[in-house]
Image (cartoon, rainbow, N blue to C red; front, side, top):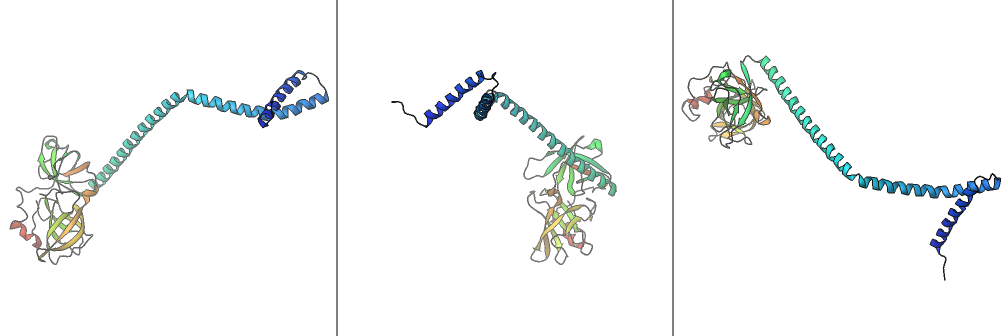
Length: 302
């Protein structure tokens, strides 16, 4: 026996609405008040159902449109990614140009404030050796560069000295090289302590300034400049800052760890000082008798 339940009742009512709709559509041309009221009632009842069916159909339609156009969407995503990568490269390029322009502005400002004859050079290579700290620049004898000329940064920090010269390039031994030695002096006018600064051989280690008088006034934070006590480097070029001071040679002298200013920069451009007179011969090693006079103001620079 057929039994009515909730689902059967809903199906029956839906069927009844459909039949009623067809019936009222047939009577649509008859203009009677009662029929008009029934038609309005039917429309009010059937409209929510039709809207629900229309929304469901729209969602189904949208799903299939998205499904069939997924290849186009993926291709569009790929194009957007390519455009994004291109824009990122352009941004990096512009940032690099901006940094270079800032360096060149500082270089020009530095040139205006010093009396040196300077030639700018780009760093084109770095030494692969972990022991030797040498860079190669794109200036050589054709540009008036000679061996032993001092090299500085665009901010006026000491970089090193020209070691070898070619026609269109030159090698510069860096201040961090273990064989590099330069005379240093404390920038404070109430101190002016002097000593010899040696390269550490590693960028991540401080250079050592030794042969400082045991009673010299030197403290952490002091700025160290080139002393100019020999004719190897001009006086007053910034080298670094004192990080630590301790006794040396059983208290007979002092030594200090110096954080170099060039370690805070990426060396891309340098300047070579051309009009500074150079020593005719190499200066003896710092442990020789001549260099033992560093504490009395006669220190020698390598």
